[in-house]
Image 1 (cartoon, rainbow, N blue to C red):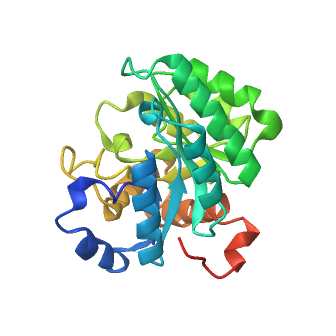
Image 2 (spheres, rainbow, N blue to C red):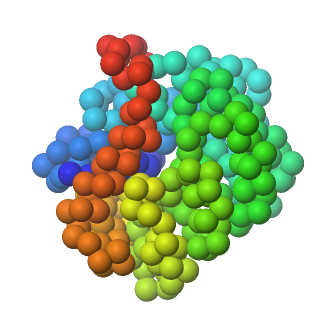
Amino acid sequence: MIFDTHAHYDDEAFDADRDKLLQNMWENGVEFIVNVGASIDSTKEAMKLAKKYSFIYAAIGVHPSETAGLTGEDLEWLKKKAVNPKVVAIGEIGLDYYWPEPNKDIQKEWFEKQLYLASEVNLPIVVHSREAAQDTLEILKSWQKDKTSGVIHCFSYTKESAREYLNMDYYFGIGGVITFKNAKKLVEAVSYIPMNRILLETDCPYLAPEPYRGKRNQSSYIDYVAQRISEIKQISKEEVLMQTMQNAKDFYFSDKRFTLKDKEL
């Protein structure tokens, strides 16, 4: 069975058939999904999906590209919602220097504030880092005194960067990019990363694996990611799926709150 550790089913790409697609997930081998917030509005939608579907959980937070308009009230709202047992992480948060706006100082400020929030509510973090390898690493290293566990979502950096994050006990989100022909650097990193630190993800509707590259992604396509990792690691696909399922449960479900009855989202 599949655990999709990072999805965006609130995206408009699913508006036409969202419920039909999600209702068939079990039949397609998908057991768990974490729907990840990227803004305050998408976080609200992620929480609605988590309320509606027993197998969907929510990560709440604001993507670096959406931080320009954030306020202290938004942060307090996130803190209030973080106590719900179907909220399993703070994310996706981090740095994205691909676009010039918001400026780097704004992104860093809200990355650090959301890191502090994660430590306050004792939830793991889902980190987005694009063309910001050094700054991301420096901020996370300085934050170690208040750390919770973390995953580098859509890991795209080098084997050397992977070593730095392994030293801090981070996980690595691996998705469809690993199946691309030009993914040499990522293949090298995945070869190095231990299996007990890999989480499988889609980032759907984006980054569909071969043979669906360029089309809408969805959780059952993780099977292709698992197959590629099995080839790199020279183990069976079933072993990849079993180990990454356990990794995801360890990462998201270790908190004692999950023995409680779900509260209203």
